[in-house]
Length: 122
Image 1: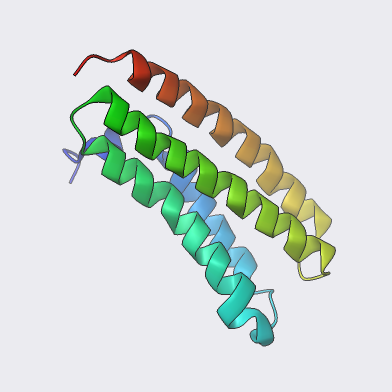
Image 2 (image 1 turned 90 degrees about the horizontal axis):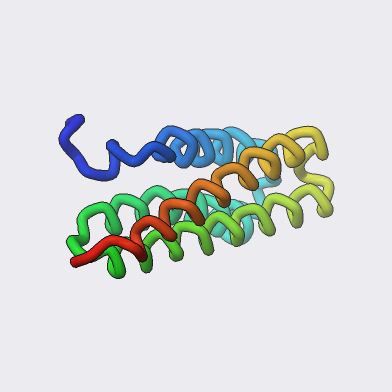
């Protein structure tokens, strides 16, 4: 399993942390949000890691960078949804502050990864 290219990404553990923490927080959302906000937040969180994995399987740096950009966009979408859930009173501000702080770090790492991929030949 350790030979999978996406597991070699230095930011992979932080991306996985984001998925796990998001899923923990989703338990606090009301049942009537199950098919709307909950579902969308799950999809956004999973999209971060899915796009990193797909990009890591690409050969050219340009292709890899495109999927890293998608992962970044999914992160931004998720952070927005977390703020909405907090504003609706579903999640605590302290929980969202931690997610935003970790989200800023992950966004930085994704940006740096993308910059490196864009410089890569092939």
